[in-house]
Each structure stands twice: as structure tokens, then as C-alpha cells.
Image (cartoon, rainbow, N blue to C red):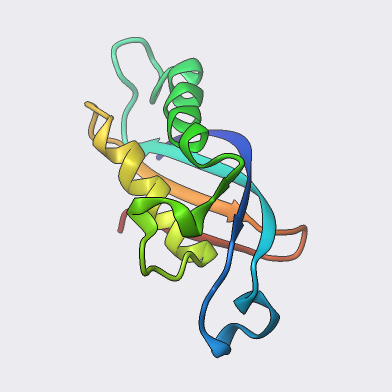
Amino acid sequence: MFTVTVKDHIMIAHSLKDPFFGQAEKMHGATYVVEVSFSSEKLNDKNVVLDIGEASRLLNAVLSELNYQNLDSLPQFKNQLTTTEFIAKYIYSEIKKSMKEKIKLKIVLHESHIASASYEDL
């Protein structure tokens, strides 16, 4: 399996309106380091999985819509608990929509140096 990985980051605000989340039930900010890996069993005719510039462009296109936003006020997240796992799946879905190639994706959101959540193709 061949893999190309690129990273970027976003700064967001949100609240997780459920007592299950303790203090995170209140409005708070988060900075996520977002990592996306593109994987394939074989290389294309240019001997790459995907051009690194294109990989970065795909990630940036999705993240630019979320960066410096209050997720609670975005219509696509209305009545959703925007957990790290949920956001990982959202980023995955948005990147997947804009891809022509059949490439496996894995999205990892690093919430801190000790915690992360991810979503990937099975």
C-alpha cells in the first residue's frame, strides 16, 4: 500500500450541548492539527498516489470553510454534537466528494499532543 499524507490546522469554537461532555458543554475553542492520508494499492501513471499539491489543495478547501468559525452557527452542523470524531467524518466526506480517483482516505484530528480521533475507509 502506498500512502501520501498532508497536514494543516484549523481553529474553531463550539459547544457540546450535553451533560455527558462536562465542561465542554460550554462554548470553547479548539485548535486541531488535521492530517489526511491518501492510500492506494498502486501508483498512477505519474508514479504517485496523488500529487502532494493536490492533496494539500483538497484539504485546504474543506478546512477553509471551518477555520475561525463557530461550528454551532454553521447550518451543516445544526443540532449536531460536533465532536472530534464527527468533524473527522465530515472532513472525510467533503474531501471524498471532490475526488475523482478511487483512493482510500484516513482523516486524523489531533486535539492535543496526547489525544486524537480519526475516520477512514474500511
